Image (cartoon, rainbow, N blue to C red; front, side, top):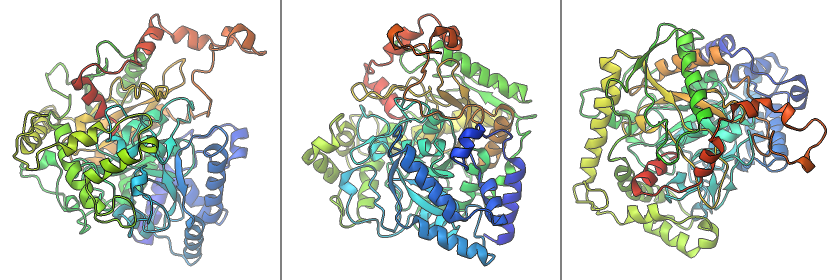
Length: 614
């Protein structure tokens, strides 16, 4: 990237930054970089009033104060011992007039399944991968280094990217423990990129990066109130990333603004083949066999698509499928439904036209063969990854090696849930055309089913209805973490894009009135439609300022009013000061929340929930 291009990106970022993303002066005095954007930080460094070393130290101090101590968000797996040296080198280059890109000197965090060829571990949260660090950078890490970014550390995650057990707890891993949500420490950050979403929301770095197979970037974005950009499969390389599936895996950013997410994507993407991941030279499953080819004009600068009026004149297909809940016995609480409908109204208020896709008969339930595809891919892909590692327990091994390791170290790896997904994947027949009794079709048949679902419904709706994008709510807001009953997924829409390998931009839409938990909406498109999705999401952000008006508080729990008993009341406490919570708590809501703790009663319901947060 040239210095001229980098300068242009910074000018665009500055001009299109959201209007009101600042906390009160007391909080600003405590942490001077609260909600600071890439553009703002670059402007300060360009002016000589800030160095990358000062910024890096500030983030480290904040992590020590709020993550490892204080409220204990636990979003950071480890800090990079070389971070300050990277910052020093970035400052030295800047003094010489060299700026490598929009993230030059900017501290970023990586999910702990993304290889860095340095002194940090890459473990996917499991001790099975702890020992000698990865031998080389992942392509994403290499691109960040080449762009001058400061790799500040690794974030916690759901172990094995939430693909070990149907009963898993998002944000928990044997190595990392349980990650928490900065809006309410007892709330779950979702997963599997749990720490990435929580860290970005907590202002522990300027940008963080996670991975997604089905929901793992967008769900933490939703739960932690940040922008989440899931790129088209193959737009960002998976080389050097602990895999689930080469069919669906992708790497993308969490950021506090759409502008920052767009700048981050500009740095980490692979415009053409990186020579390590075949997907970077091809197209995702949804485009395969259709005659569509990889674009030759993939943008190098996504910030040029930012538009505060991005929704004006847009035609959006809206779907509410699944928003009432996966399980009819655990429906979505009324306050959540009301908040989602208000978020949809903001689309039309900003000038968009909505087309009801449900009334037209489209199916957005997700690819019917998805779990089979993921299982088959995982068993093969994880062995390929293990072959790249040395000096760790499963180096050169297979999925069975990881199963054996977990059984031998069950007290640290399996204190709360089992490894039934690992066992299921290992039990599959080896050939792509072999019958798979557990799934009812072969692997190739499952691929075709997922491809056809995508072409008929996602691409079909976009084309026939002349849509700019499809839109829906992202996921239900964060639930209270429960190590006994597991995750409480009520609904999620990431499967619309998952099977075909298509992109999503999730953007904060507000908080549920009276409950203090954020939620977001997602914009979906066909492969390589990131420019359009960024335009739409930035337009929504510009008219709602949802995050800017609802920053995390690091409270022990939310809601934190109307919950104390008479003998616990301090001066100023009590129902008279909590009218908002009382008025928005509709009859029956408490009963619904209590019911949410019940585990799904059928394999179908369990599978639907398991596929979210991967």
